[in-house]
Image 1 (spheres, rainbow, N blue to C red):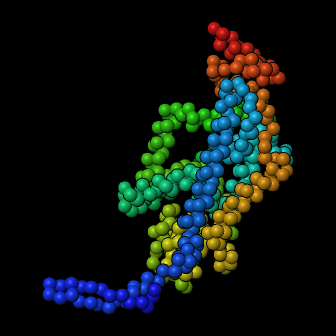
Image 2: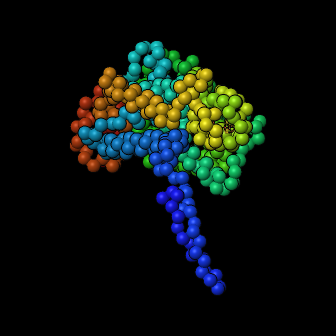
Image 3: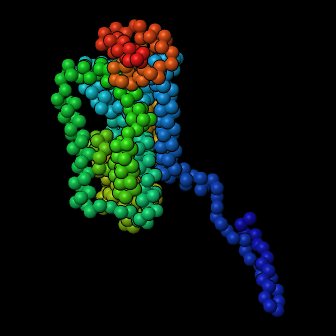
Length: 399
Ligand code: SF4
Ligand code: SF4
Ligand code: SF4
């Protein structure tokens, strides 16, 4: 309709005027707008985050379905989702040292150590992309920043010195875990931990942490949520040892946010957009352990080809789709290869699970509906301690 004309009737007290007006030229080209939108990191990243969040929820539901019958002493034909081991980073670190020492992936939580390696790989490839593109906690923290802006109207940051000191906390926690596990644990201690009944049911304990949450845990989570509203990304920025590890490894990443000083107009929009308070407009290459390749600065830059995520010398600029593809490929491709190699699923029989759950007080013997099936299921227990425990619990049930 561009170029067309229409008539405007203007009625005053005495007369009616007819004015010819040009049709407003809105310059809307739907395909062009869609092209622009496609380039936005925010849109693609959100899709990626939702994809991983849904996957996490499905894994959680499946694991719940696997655990409930076991708690009632039943064995059902529900396969345990190996992805649940993503939530056992301590166990994964222990398994990693065991893997380095023995060249074998343990059969208790094999996917845990592999997922840990996938996460590490994403950091070595594209900064802390795991945090901004995959991690559900990072996603939740980001959603809480919207509340921050609603309440405070602008970004509230801590004084630089306090911020710097607090950021050190996550590195202290990381150092503690690395020292305790990688340095202090002997090969024997590693083996004892990996094959302990505690480690076998660590995933079930983790599930129960949420399904039967204690008051202390609930209050702690609420405090962290409130702190994350007041100070953006409180947990991620100051306390998460996983994030600290990824931040340290991200220095190796060849892909970094880079600025072209020739076309940059120094408008500082990128600085204001950065959730990590990095002063992008002052550097040509962002070398920071905090950058999680979210692309918010790139989205905010009004100049073409001025700010981008690329290899040195502006080579191979990454589009948002390329970052998403890279991250998804690491997880999907990695798990596919691990499946093919028979390294994805653990080798813990349901009977062993039942025995380990018994030992860790995860079975409410009074809640067991079919006692005969339960006893039959445990008939094969070769752990004398577990058999004695079972007999004791059954006697208590009879009282
Ligand atoms: S810092 Fe930790 S919790 Fe936050 S997004 Fe990264 S890995 Fe997840
Ligand atoms: S520098 Fe850019 S990509 Fe990195 S965290 Fe800040 S806004 Fe995100
Ligand atoms: S937003 Fe773009 S143009 Fe503005 S200061 Fe940052 S890099 Fe330069």
